[in-house]
Image (cartoon, rainbow, N blue to C red; front, side, top):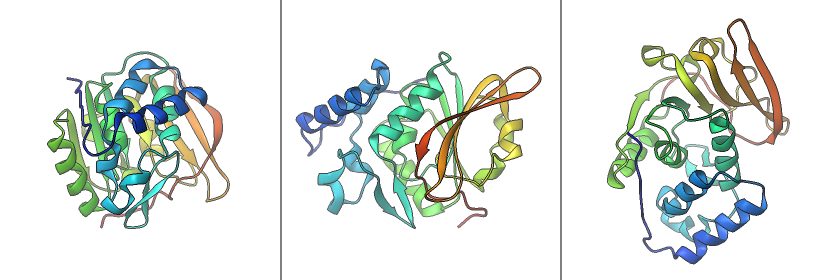
Length: 219
C-alpha cells in the first residue's frame, strides 16, 4: 500500500515550504505530489556536506558519477506519470539515492526499482526502510532490461538517458500505461512521454532535460 513519511529532521519546514512555493510557481499543481515532497526529508538523500543545499532547485552529486535530480524535474515527471489517473504498479529505472523512489512510493501502491550500482542501491534501500517506506521492491540489474518478472506496469519512470527508447521497456508497459524517459546525449536530451495503445505507442516530446546516461551492465 502507499506509504507516508514525515521527517522534519535538521531542516526547517520553512526551507521545504520555499521549495513547494517554487514548484507551484513553476507550474506543478498536483497537491498529492506537493504534499509528498513537503513531507520527504530530501536532505537525508544527499551527503551531509550538501544537506544545506538539499532544497535548492538544482541537481546534486550522490557519488559514482550519479546525481539526485532537481526538485522541479522530480515533481514534473511524477505529475506527468500520474496525469492519466491512479497507478497501482510502477517500474523505476535508476534508483540512485532513492529520493524519486520515495516520492513515487507515497503515491502508488507498489514501486519496482532497478539500479545497476549496488552500493547506491543498498544505501537507498536502507534509507527508505528507515523512513518507513516499505512498498518498494529492489533489483540490482541493467536498467535497460527492465524487470520482466513483474510486468506489465501501469507506469515506467526512467531517470537516466539512453540514446533511444529500450525495446524491453516498451514491451513491459501495460496497455494504457505511461512511460517518462529522457532521450539523447548530454546537452541535447528531451523528456519524452510514451503511451501504449492497443496497437501502437504514442510518443510525445515534453521538454529539454539533463540526466546522466543510461549505461549497460551492473557494478
